[in-house]
Structures are given as structure tokens and as C-alpha cells.
Length: 357
Image (cartoon, rainbow, N blue to C red; front, side, top):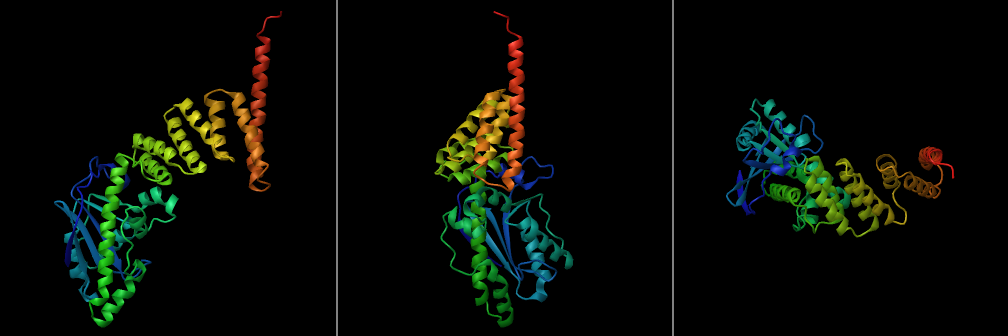
């Protein structure tokens, strides 16, 4: 194995990420944590796929120490796995797509060779969280993309993950360690990016960064809500509304903020935010109009406003032609009919209650 160390700031507590790891009866993050990443002989899984390079990172004082294990030949896999299992003995793991790929593959290979697989108390796969936060803006949650676009790291100029199997095959065929240099560097960069991303997310869930773009803050709010961190979700959406560069972005932030207020039964605040959301765009979202009409009718009792919103939605639907708009139109027309009946009954009741002049 080879070891390297890179300077790293003291991380914030990992506690904000606990809910993402689906803990089994844990109310505190078990320390210490480690990060690990595999490079494998195949990308699609299957019985013949093996890990030929396992990188493990852990904090040692103020530095992130990276230790990398290389499988020198296929016949020595059992000894390789024993060493890897010892290095992975820790209370908690953080991986990237590790829940569905890295950890199952490692455990399967250990079981095949009679090696006791490591069993941490907690495993956090950061990929779903990264998708929730950044895929809206970037269209991808590839770790290499996040390293440059989110963390500001320089683009990697070596081989990518898809080239790892070919590099190891060349190493086995020629026995020249040169073929593994690119794989070792790629693995090390991924580990440093993974650790940095972990700290970035943990800190963001504590205090949503006001400098983040609005789409990232909206994604962060969704993640914070999943973690049960509603104050952070509200703050992220408030900052997203201020950071929005386009009317549609601002409307999305306001509508998401309204949903959280509605969840807290603050119906007046939710309606005010939705009114702002549907007022900003030239063509407001029918979903936002629908939510606001429901609030006005069922929670705030303003039937006239609910009817005005319904009429506006029907006018918008005339711009969408036939097809899917026909089903939506039918639902809005049923709402209009219901509101007209309710308003007529209310007017009739009011009339009966008046004294003759």
C-alpha cells in the first residue's frame, strides 16, 4: 500500500448528515469516520468483477491521510482483501455510490474468499444527497463534475473512471506499474473530492451558503427537509429567492417556501408567497396556481380569489392546445363549477338573512 497526506481543514461535525445514512438506532454520528473508493476490473458488476485498487481516507490530526491498496495479481486477492478489511475497520463509512456498488462488491469478494467483511455501524452513500442538491443545475452528479463545478478543484487531466479496467488489464499483461499510475492518481483525487464534498454538505445543512446559486439552494432545502432540518430548509429557500436570476427560479423558490409554511399550518404566509410566485412570471406555473387556489378555497375561505385563479388557469390552458391540456382543463372546469355553486349558495344565504326594507 501507498500512503499520502493532504492538508484539510477541521471538518464540521458530521451530525447534520446522520439522517441521510438511515441509521439503525443511532442518534449520534459514530466516530471516527473514513472515506473509501474502489477501482474495479469492470463497470457493470457481476461475479467476475473485482476491486484491484481500494483507497481509504481518514483524518489524522489536521490532515486527511490517504492509504491505497493495490491487488498485484489475481491469485493474491484473499491476502489483498484481508489487508483492506483491516484498514476499513471503523465505526462509520462515507462513499459515493457505495451503498449499491462499492460496499456490496467488497463484501461479496470477502465472503467468496472466507474473509470476514468489515461491518461499520453506519454507512453514508453521498451520491443521492449530491443528486438532490446539484443535479437541478448541473444535470449530472458525477463526482468529477462536482469537484470542479462545486468545490473549485482543477479539472483532472488523467484517465477517467471508465478507463480503469483497461489500465489494470495492461498492468497484468505487462507487469509494469506505469499502467497503474493514472489509476492511483484518479482514486486519490476522488477520495479528496469525496471528503471535501462531505464537509461542504455538512456545513451547508448547518448554514445554507448565501453565495450558492438559487437552484443549488432549492436542492439543499429539499435535502434539509429530508433530514428533519426545517429551519435550514426555510433559510435556504429564502436565500434562493434572493439569489434567483430568472423569474422561473424565483417562483420555484417561493413555491417551495410556501409548501413548508403550509406544512407548518401557516396558511396566510403560504398564500402570500404563492401570490408572489404566480405574479412574477408572464406564464405562471399551473401547479403554483393550483396550490394557491386550494389554499384560498379550503384554508382561507376566499372563494372569489379562488375563482379568479381558476379563470386565469383556464385562460392559460387555451394556449396549450389539446392533448394533456384537455385533462387539466376538465379538472379546472370542475373547480370553477364548484366555486360558482358555493358562491351562489353563499349569496342566497346572505339574501335570506336580510330584513326587508
